[in-house]
Figure 1 (cartoon, rainbow, N blue to C red):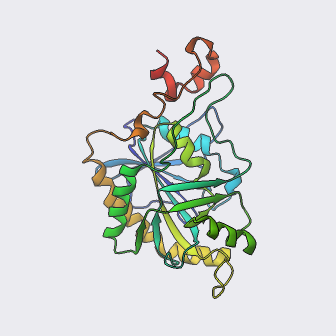
Figure 2 (tube, one colour):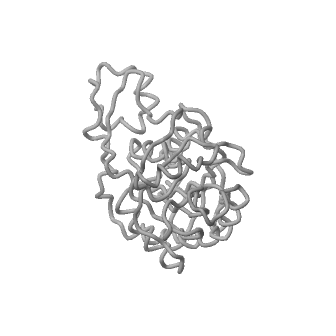
Figure 3 (cartoon, one colour):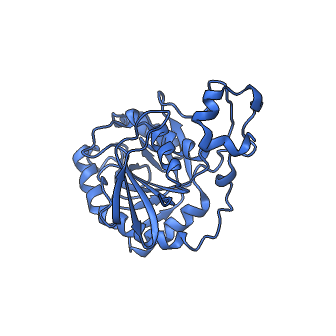
Length: 289
């Protein structure tokens, strides 16, 4: 099977990618359980693409229930090198208005109960995560979104909360004081796991609301979120169509995402349990020879 170089993780409101051609479905098995749904493989502008709806088709998986380890592992097993995350977000800034798009460059973790690493159980690794989004892929993604004519902001810190509840007004006001730009529920641990898997990871964050800090706006609701997301759904797919041929111009990955584990593994190879070596082989095998 031809490797799928680009992985698309669809968020709320984006459950399919009908622009793909030569489509097939696969259901990879992983040591961490099943991915959120079947992965759709197809071709776009000559690039093999793997599409996975994060919350499952019909949106049946809550943010805290997303099996991000299985999702990222499955994409890695299909040959994916670049991952684009599509997600909804609230804005913590007046100038990041609903229906704008943000290509964030930083993350702030406020999640509480999600497995955030492939490692443990006898194998310890500490990746560098100072730049959680791949700067190379993020730059290309910004250019692709800009080509659609959308209002797109380059850079910004996304704060990730546990959910599924939206923020209180007190939380929202404090988050603004912290200097974050947008708020969401799904970028973590996804981004951490993508880095551990040595995948380039970038995000299209659709602003759907002003959280609850904005005194002249209605409090955020699911109806508001979906309405604004659906307005941008076609735009997102158009941006992916622009992005795909850009990736063919990259001869090789020179960003640090591609070698994130090269200096991260601290456990002696001969002390790593055989089962862990087997389960994590697609991540670490080249470093344990």
